[in-house]
Length: 269
Image (cartoon, rainbow, N blue to C red; front, side, top):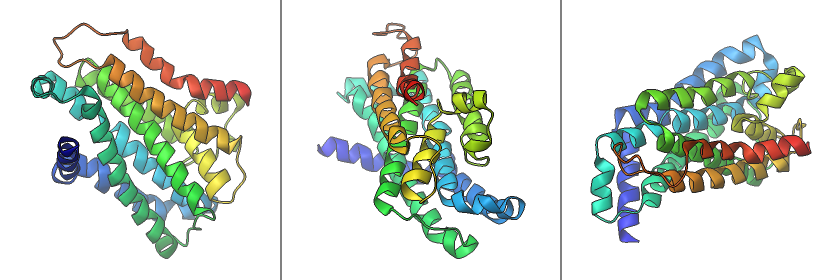
């Protein structure tokens, strides 16, 4: 337990001291939040109603998809994980602790956004704080799980960037952050339901912000939680200690199973 706490403390401090992680965890999300808060309500006044959840979801996407996978890939390529293995550090700790510290950083960013948005932009606060916290946690879990899984299955940093952007860019366009889900064409809407961002915005709107959900919001919570747990389980199962270790307990394509909860939700909708 002491080793876990020390590892957690080290990773948390790294998230502040490391310039790249500081950018992804704090500076980029908060800078984007301020920019959107000052610009978007003038372009689209309706954006103000979802400003808080939309920018919280953006912060989660940025910190996880753009910040979590790269250190995992680099550590494997440089042989750092081999020294962890020699010293008896389990693969589960290598994957779970960075995710937990990132979620803790995101909780701080979420508090900053939630507390300042009504003062700076007159944005409405959540009407159900318990559901707001719950939705944040399952969204962070789902995105952190996918990010860790990307770090595990990516053979190098270039592939990792491609996988991360394959989720990040559609999430920005179709996830309901800037454009309401109800305005999407039917086909685009079906594709959007496979994205954690869409499920997160639906749950935030329906359960926390007092707005109408586009589909079952509790189904979104269940899908996010299930996908997050499944992603971590797959990441641990597919984990390899170094880039020279070509033996895996399964093929990397198994990572696609992380979409299963969203597919089931789409079929049941």
